[in-house]
Amino acid sequence: MKNNKKPVTLVLVGIGGMGSVYLQTLLENRDRGLFKVQGTVDPFPKRCPQLDELQTLRIPIYPDLENFFDRHDAELAIVSSPIQFHNSQTCLALQKASDVLCEKPLAATIQEDRAIIEARDRAKKWVAVGYQWSFSKAIQALKKDILKGLFGKPKRLKCLYLWPRDEAYYRRNDWAGKQQDGEGRWILDSPANNAMAHDLHNMLYVMGRTMETSAGPARVEAELYRAHDIQNFDTAAARCLTDAGVEILFYVSHVSEKDKGPVLSYEFEKATVFGEGRNSDIQARLGDGSAKNYGSPDAEPMNKLWASLESVKSRKPPVCGPEAGQSQTLCLNGMQDSMPDIVNFPRDLIVADGEPGRRRIRVKGLDAVLEQCYENNSLPSELGIPWSGKGKIIDLTDYRNFPSDKLTL
Image (cartoon, rainbow, N blue to C red):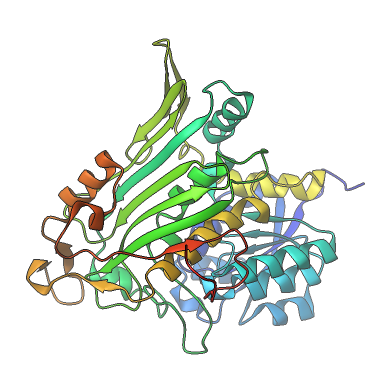
């Protein structure tokens, strides 16, 4: 039995980007006695905003996780590195007897997700996936009501999220917007696998048959587009059907004119769950005219950290583990297979505003197209949009590896 008063020893893997957010939270709460940071890992620590404070506190920085484990143990590893390292670093930490909080997504490919699950089972440890909405009081309460049948059977869930990003967003590191890195490791960085991965995951998560699982995607059709000079897509429209026959529609872009969303509508037999905008409340409107407000799922974004520290001591598995996180990976892999050749927006529709290197890239008329798709439950090709392309329907029922050689439906 663990001493619940003893601080949890931890290592933070990645101290730039999202890792710096974790680090700031840890530094601000270091006197609470909940944890002890044994060390950090980053091959490029100069990118860390808190580097001076780390050095003042004499918290060691190692170039890789192997070097850390050569000198220390850690009860919890927080993996907040680039996507292509999630699998290898999570599996190594499990092998070294650490529980793991891995930032979203769990990994780039479904085969890597399965490898993590196998490593977890061998180690008899647990893995949490850092989808902060899943750890929020709002989404936990909503999911419990769905499982209780308060809203009846689900019919359709959809999300629209327009979030403009400039050229600097894609130049902030050496993997943004890429499908693979120089070593051939899959990244699949895109709105659907990074900034808006939460929103795709959440639609699958709330449909899970238990609190710890997500709905299984059975088939997916996607249309993938880009305006930025990147490998992967910056705009997507997708239709997914779950193994229970529930339709999921997902519309996202980083080259819109407006900053709008997430706009969500989850339709059930007896209710509609809705929300619009960052930090907005999730609400349900029931058929009898009554309403229920679940609050904002963004109210406490670091619940995933505190819940993971508590899970180290209680040994109770986290509410969002690999079985919940892998559905987003499976859907994303299917989306990439649906349209392996990304469609470029017509050059005459692309507008660039601002200074080179920080220009805001937008596509004329795109907002209206995606909003119309959202309202009509359609994909751009189904509306006859001139620049659109039609993706293949990908069968996900026995999808084992990305990229898949399975026949399409």
